[in-house]
Image (tube, rainbow, N blue to C red; front, top):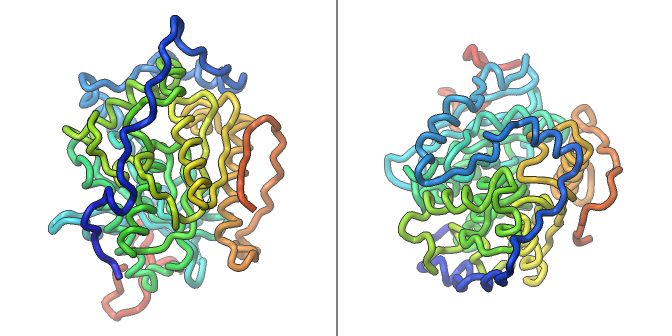
Length: 400
């Protein structure tokens, strides 16, 4: 039965005062060296890529991102008929609030498909649900036979906590309630996201557990934004040296939390690193770079899951900065990371250890070829006639 807890701090674990302060010293910590291929890619972005988000420039940066970030149309996302794509408007957590979901699946795929419930990145302040889909569909939906719901959650500071996570949870519940008409397997749902989306996915796993809601079978957390306190060693080590540094991180958390920022009154549903109870969570894939601000909070979250008796697979990619494979997709590290994620998805989605993807959609992931990274792991609406719903193409006709 789905119900709201009386107190998030009592269900997800009482929030703690935070990690100890960093030791003082005469010199700033030296960042780890960047992978040579990634260094070339980062230099090619120019000095503007390192400009931090600040409270003073946030509104301008949001306007700039909204104007520049791609937002492919439904027709574009269909990719010449390879995918069936639709935009769905579903109820949010509060009366009158609506959430847009971008639904996509391989064209012609029959029967209920496993679902990747995906949350985009952008520090909770920028990004959109459309721009991430070409890559997600190409790398996961098509080869693994996945349905995808990409969530257009509201951005901070216009929507502060708890609005984004509650709207995502409402959308997840809606998807499960309409699983038959959506053609998804409600017992094979993976929560996934990058950066802010990774933090939201982790928070959704906590919320679903505590409220007796949908039971995802995995959480795919890519360079997740988990800790509002900014007191990790990597946050100090990478100050001014990462594409997402502690100044940007603090700006984003302040936008999301408002008056709660900097206090102990931050629930685990806002910042999952605050949770002290990580039992009974779905298996996690957690990935960070050795040269990124969010490195230590990702590593600590995996360690906390293990200490709670849970399952987590942790990858620390050597010399990688935040979101590295988006900027250097052809790099050796970028290819290794994509293969590792796909193998994990294949394993977690496989029924009773079998092969998940149908033969016509399957592919064999190559083995990792680059040594040196750390890997630790344990072992909808209906049609007027009531027919099962199928996404419409951009021209409004049902794909055959």
